[in-house]
Length: 433
Figure (cartoon, rainbow, N blue to C red):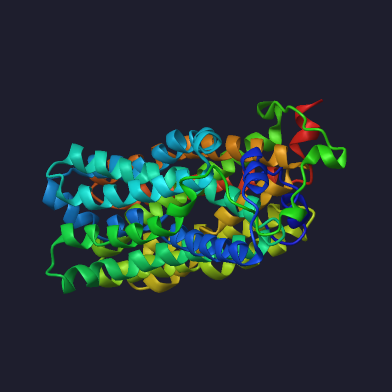
C-alpha cells in the first residue's frame, strides 16, 4: 500500500515455494528482468479483466432482460451474483495458491473468465446465463484475492507503485467496459450477445503472460533480499482470533456496505438513467465516469489516509458525496446526470479506503492477511442482498423512489462503521485481550 503502510507490507513472509525456486533455479540478471517485465504485464492485463464482466452487463442489462425474458427480481439476482461468487470462491484462493502456486491460479482464473464471457451470451436461458456468469466471476474472485498477494511477494520494495498500477488498471478496465460496450455493440450489428462476448478477447490476452508460471509453484521476487520472514526479525507470528476484534467487525461491515453500494451502482445506475430518458450510450458513459473516478483517487486516498491518525473523516466525506448523489438521482436524474455520476464515483472510492485500513489496523503481515480474509469474505457476504433488494423494490413499486431510499439508508451505517473502523488501534491488541 502507500506511504506509511509500505513498511508493513514489505515485511510479508516470503513463501516456501518462492524460496525453493530460488534455490533450485538460479537466475541471471537478464532472466530476472524478463520475469519482472512479464509479471508487470500479467498484473496489468489481469487487473483490466477484473470488472468488465460486471460493468458490460450493467450497460446492456435491459437488452439482456428482454432477450432472456428476465423479470426485475431475476435481474436483481443477477446483480447479486458477483458478491456471492467473490465471497464463496475468494475464500478458496489462498488454499489453491498454496497447492498450485499463485501464478498458476491466476492463469486458470483468466481462462475461466474467458470461457465464462464467451459462453454466457449464447447460453440461451437464464439458468445457463447465470452459470456461465458464475464461471467468469469465479475466475475474477480468485484473481481478485491473489493479485495483492502477488504484488507483495514479487515486488516487496515497490508495493506502493505496483498497487497504484494495479488499482489504476482495474479502474480503467471497469470504466472502459461501461463506456464502450453500448457503442461497440451497435458497431458490431446491435446484438447484445456479441457486445458481451467480445470482452472474452481481452481475458484471453490476459492468459498468455501467466503461462510461464503455471509449471512452477513460484517465481523469483524482483528483489528477493528485501523480503524477509517475520521470525528473522524476532517477530514470531501470533495466532489471532479476529472475530473477537470490534475493529475487525467494523471494517468487515464497512467493506460490505461499500461493496453493496458499488454493485448496486454497477448493476443498476445505467438503468436508472435510461428510465429517466437518458440514451443508452450516454447512460453507459455516465457509469464510465463514475468508475473512472477510481483511477486518480486510488492514488490519493491511501496517501492521505496513512498520514492521518483517524480515517473516519475520509469515510464521512465519501458518505456525504454518496448521499448528495442519491438525492440528485431522486429529484433530477436526467437534468444533473453528470454531477450525480461524479459524486457517486467519489463515494465509491470507499473501496481503496477499506483496503488501506486493512493494512493499518494490523501490525504484522500475518495479522494483515487474517484481517483481509475476514473483512473481505464477511463483507462480500453482507453485500449480497443489496442488489437483489433493489431489483425487487424496482419491480414491485414500478419506479426508483424506494430503491434510492434503500441506497440512501445504507449509506448512513456505512459512514458510522467507517468512523469506528478508522480509529487508531490494531486487531492484535483487541483479539489478544
